[in-house]
Length: 312
Image 1: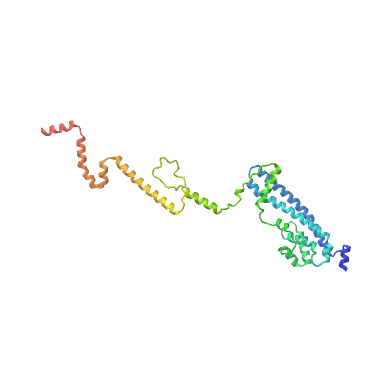
Image 2: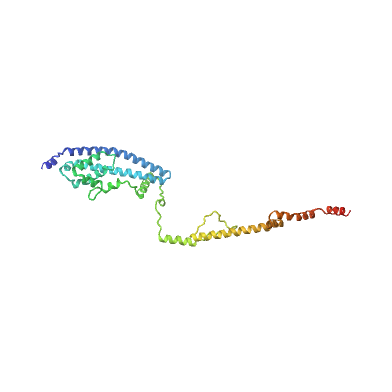
């Protein structure tokens, strides 16, 4: 009866009065943090705009993540401010019951959940301690661990998540800023989407490989315009080994033909003798032949004079 009368008269205990005071301080702190986040949001949007004007959509897409995080933070601060005002107005109802009322469960659970994830609001830490003393540690643990039936709004959980925002959300930020500033935005979707390989695509690739001519080296490449440094493509290991074998055979045949052509072009019998009988003995055998060659190469007049002298 006494507690009911206190609720009707608006009277609260010291603990509830402390809770109202902390909620008021948290509301003022939220206003300060909101101003800081608005400045950071404006800076991030300005960076995205500048990058789009310079023609760097990829870098602008990365900067759009900061825009989304700052915007989510502002949305969470608005929600927490409404929670603080609700609990402050219903402080007498909090003091009258030992368990958290259903109409205040979402607000109380939301403040407890945000207290462990927002270091900019230290007042929420004390609010969580007072709620734990009032409604029990089980209530605080259920809200902090997101247990079933805790009553937390899923939007707060999503906006306070540390996961990277979805690609579609970041692209939407670029499109919105581009539309506001009249900047054409070209998004390269292929660089962010993973290729999907289907069975039909695999079969089509195999057919193209079968239809593609095999790269086999040829000895006569005078009429070919293809560079020798062009990369060769083979279907499998056996095809590559066969091509290597044919290339080696062609190279050996070309080398043999070059040697035969060089021999036919020289036409010097002395070279053949040098190749057949190399060594010092071969040099000695060639001395008489060289003498005969020298005698034949002398003029006829010299040979006649020497004959006359011999007859004399």
